[in-house]
Amino acid sequence: FLFGYTVSFTGATLKVMVEATGACGKSSMCPVGSLIASLAALCAAVSSVIIGPISDTYGRRTVLVFNTGIWIIGYILIAISTNPWILLIGRGLTGVAMGIASVLVPVYVAETSPPELRGRLGSLTNVFISAGILAVFAEGLIKLNWRITAAMAIIPALCSYFAFVFTRRLPETPRFLILVRGDLEAGRMAAKCLAGPDNIDHERALIDDVIGKQPSNNGKKKEQALTKGERKAIFAGIGVVTCFVMSGNNTLQA
Picture 1 (cartoon, rainbow, N blue to C red):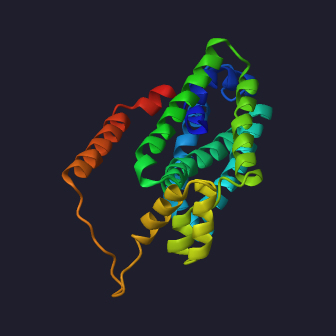
Picture 2 (cartoon, one colour):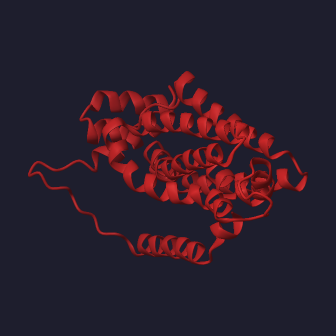
């Protein structure tokens, strides 16, 4: 949700933010204003590249919890900004968080979902991105104050934080615990937590899916050829994302 919210945030608020913070003086737009609009995407490009190895070291859940703090701090800075420099720092932080979320949210969903539900649950990521985009433009349509629009983003970030920290249904992923840390027992406990006490099939599916990725006795992973349907699905997914990016849709929203 916050990914889409951040992508389109300046689309509904840029002009009034620039005027309120004096970023362009008496002009309605200037290079600083353009930087405010584009900085989130620039920072997201950097953070999305480096976050993979970091999540392999500290875990997907740990990094996602840390990322909620980045969202919160970034939008607080935007909401209270009185000059363009604070606004730029806030936009940069939300861009970093956006890049982290773009990589780790799909990974976390995939690694905590049973194979038969993975596609359907993974598609919800795009649904919530679209919901975030819609929310920003709806707030712009009713001419909500831009500081309130920024503050509203803190609510879903706090909900994510409390869901990770204060509930027991969002543990570290079994795949990370087993394949990266080599802790089979912790992976089983995480799978049991995700599946619930009465869903043995779900728990077994999560564990079997992970164990099937482990190296065989000779140290080599078992290779399995993709089916024709799987290859079509992969090419279709790549094609959709490529067309989406090449259309410049993110630029139009921002």
